Structures are given as structure tokens and as C-alpha cells.
Amino acid sequence: MTTTTLTDGAAAANQDTKIRIRGLSKVFHTKSGAFTALDDINLEIPVGCFFMIVGPSGCGKTTLLRILAGLEEHSSGSLEIASPAANRPGNSMVFQGDSLFPWMTVWENAAYGLTMRGLPKSEIKNVVGHYLSRTGLSRFHDYYPHQLSGGMRQRVSIARAFANDPDILLMDEPFSALDEQNKLLLQEELLRIWEETRKTVMFITHSVDEAVTLGDRIMIMTAHPGRSKVLVDVPFERPRRVLELRARPEYGELVYNIWGHLREEVQRARAQDEGRAS
Amino acid sequence: MTNAAQDANLKTRSFAPRRRAWSRESVERAMNIVSPVALLLVWEFCARAGWIDVRFFPAPSKVFQVMYNLIQNGQLEKHVWASLQRLWWGILFGGFPALILGVAMGMYRTLRVIVEPVIMATYPIPKSAILPLILLIFGLGEASKIVMVATGVFYPILINAMAGVLEINKIYFDVGRNFGASRWQVFRTVALPGAMPLIMTGIKLGVGLGLVLIAIAEMVGAKSGLGYMIWNAWEILSVETMYVGLISIAVLGLIFTLILNELERIIVPWKSSR
Image (tube, rainbow over all chains, first blue to last red; front, side, top):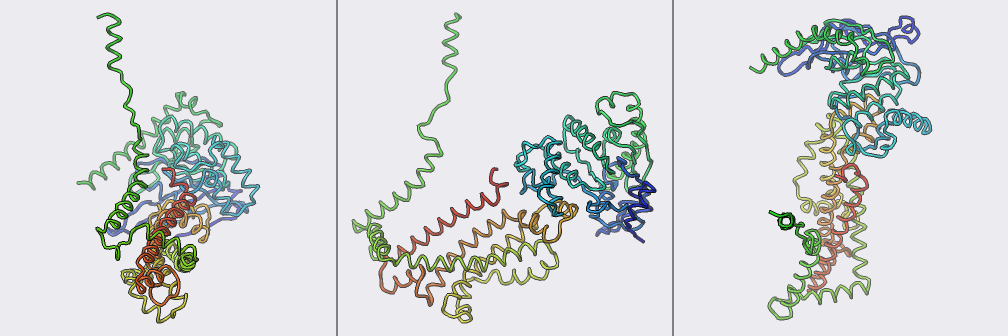
């Protein structure tokens, strides 16, 4: 049985829960048989939580996010998302890799969600202008994506999602293709923009550092089939400064701790890959 | 070794890059003009010397003389204008439905499965071979010529538009859905612009084919147009006029290519600066 319910906004506010997932599973039917991507996921994500999902590659992280985004159907279980305020989109996704339209300028890309919703021109101008300046892209508003670096393209992608002002932000390894320096700068930038609105965020990463740096709560997933292995709370106060945070001994301890949970799963994922290869 | 000797040594080793009087680019550009002109000169010389049969290959100077006369008495303008009008309507009537249907077929699998077999079965039929049928259906008037051009333009644009949409990375359609784009908005903001580079290729192919077909269509049952002019020249044995017709078609083709290339630069700016 599958249900996707949009609960009444007021009721959800009482419970302070934005997303509730119960026994959610996803099975893909392929030529070589059924493939369980997600198995019995249970989650409760409060409003305004910066929620991180960490897991070995192929554990179904992206599938879970795509289900939340409405781009994929779940096979069984239930998914409840508190309905967004009127005139506000439910969610916007920052995709993994290049997802900017090559045929649109930076401005047109960042304005995409608002344009599709047919908002008045003046409002679009204000909102897009704000987020392009917050991401340091104002100067490049009439550039096409191929004229930008990878880091700049990902910033446009973030501006596009924030400008759409969704209830929930879904981020699928948005920084995984970037080099270490750019990644750090973008993490700081993301935290700064997020502080303005404190939206509910669901953020996928394979980097434990990134999870601890950005998140309030981290779900570590098992190797295939994807299950929730353990939930970890991140105790650090906000607003956070990335570098200062990383210099703290508690930070190192937490990263080490999480690695302990994750190592086993990564090794299992590797064994599965090797088993498949031989 | 003294310092002076070392300096001398250095001097002989450091040499400026060799300068060419002509860059390769300007030589190539010059050849674009020089080689056809040279061919015309050789042709002219051979015709005057009587080395080639001027009944089939009249001297270029005579062709240009006839061309000048045809321009003076307005004949050439009349024929060019007639052909251009048929081309224009044919491209419009064939190209527009092809564009819409092709993009839609790329977007919707069901539509593709239904329509594609029909397209693939009729595509290999030479368009010139259906001229008699089209004359039968549409008569000897303007309609049959326009339909001929339209059938020629239709296939390359449809096939390229469909292929263009199918080549678009799936992620762009996901973005469209995630940001709440309606079907029409996805068509307008994702499928159409994404397929545009290949659609332009289809338009170029289609216009080229349209020129071929208009010449053929006008040779049968027309009283105007460049095709008629060439056919009529054969009947009255005015070889020079025939050449004027051929040159006119070539020049039209060249102008179309230049216009379409410029159009492509404007419509697909995100591909041009590569």
C-alpha cells in the first residue's frame, strides 16, 4: 500500500514535523529481476531541520530524494509532507551535476521556477536579483552556462532553487563535482543563505565532513538495499563558520564516530560490487 | 668565453618566429574568389578558341550578356519572384507542422510509436516520383508546387526535431517537472530550445531539398519560375538562358545558406561561441 499525503498545514505545525516517512520501500523492476533500492525507511524530519543523508554509493540516496521531489513513485509505505503555505511550491531540487539549461542565461536559469509560476515581472526581478547577488553572480547574469566554471554553475543552481522559495529544499550531492577549495566556499555560502530563511533541507552527500559541517541531523544508510542504519544528532550551534568548526576537537570526534558506522557499509558495498564483477 | 662572445651566441640562438607575408586564412579566403574566377577565365578562353562546343558550353561572357538582357526586361525578376513565393509557402506549410509534430514525437513515446512507422515507410520515396500524383490531386496551379516543396521540407525537419528532443539530457526534463512547468511550458522551455541545434540542421537540409523540388515541379505544367525558365530554354534551344537559370538557383542557394547561418547564430547563441 502506498500513500502520499499532504497533511493540513496547521496540524503539521502543531506536530512540528515537515516530513514523515513510514516503512517506505522502492523496488525497481528490471529485466534481470526486482531490485530493492530502498527498504523500510522510517523518518521524521522537523520543520527547519537541515537533514543530511550519508551512505555508500548505490545505496538509494538519490532515489529517496527523487521520491520526495515527486519525480519517482515509492512502491510501498507512506510519505507525508506538510502542505506548503499557499502560493509556495512544495520543494525545489538542486540536482547532482550540470542541470542548468544551456540555452538560458544565468538570469533566465535562476528565474526559471518563478517564471513557470507566472509571477509578476517586478517580483521576479527582485527575488532573482537578490539571490544572484547573494551568490556573487550579478556580474554574470547574461552569461550562458558554458561560459562559467563548474563552481559558478552550481551556484546558479543553488540560486535557482532558493529563488523559487520552496517549502523544502532537496539537494543531491550538489558539491561533489567541485574541488576542495570551491566546495568549502560554497558550503559557507550555502549556510549563509540558509540562515536567512532556515528552510527544511534534505541534503545528500557521500562526504562525512560535509554532513557534519552542514547538518542538524545525519542519517547513515546501509549499503544495498538502502536502509536507515543510524541517526546522529549534530550538536553544534548556529550560525556556523566552516573552518572554525573544523578546528574543534568535538568536530573530529563526531566525524570519527560516524566513519565507524559508515566504514562497515562502504566495505559491504565494495564486496557487493566485487561479487557482481566476478 | 668572453661576455661579448656569449652575447653573440645568444643572439644567434634567439630568433623571431618566421613571418609569412600571407596568413593561411587570407590565402584560403582569396582562393574562394580566385579559383571560380580562374575557371570562368579558362572556360571563356576555351570557348573563344573553339576548343569546346559552344552549343553546350557557351562562353561565360555570352551567358552574362543574356543575363543582363533578362534582368533589363524584367523576365529574370519575374521568374525568381515566382519561385521564391512558392518556396516560402512550401517551407512554411511543410516546416511548421513538421517542427511541432517532430518535437511532440520526441516528447511523447506513445505518439512516437504510432507515427514513426508511417514516417519511416514514406520517407525513402523520392519526392520527385510523387509529382504526378500531386499534379493529379492539386492540379496545375500554385498549390501543387507549394505541396512539392512542403513534402521535401517536412521530412528532414521532422526527423531532426525528433532526434533533437531525444538527445536532450533527461535531467532537463526533471528540472522542468520539479520547477512546476506545465506540458506546454516544458515544450517551450526545454524540448524546443534543446532540440534547436538539430532543428536548424533540418531546416538547412529541407531548404536545400526545397530548391531541388521547386525546379523539378516548375518544369512540369508551370508558366513561371526558374524551373520553367530552364525547361523553356531547352525547348527554344537558348542554352545561355538555361545557364542563367542554373546560376540563379545556385545564387539563391548560397543566399539561403548565408541567411540560415546568421539565423542560427541568433537563435542558438549558446552553441555558436564554441
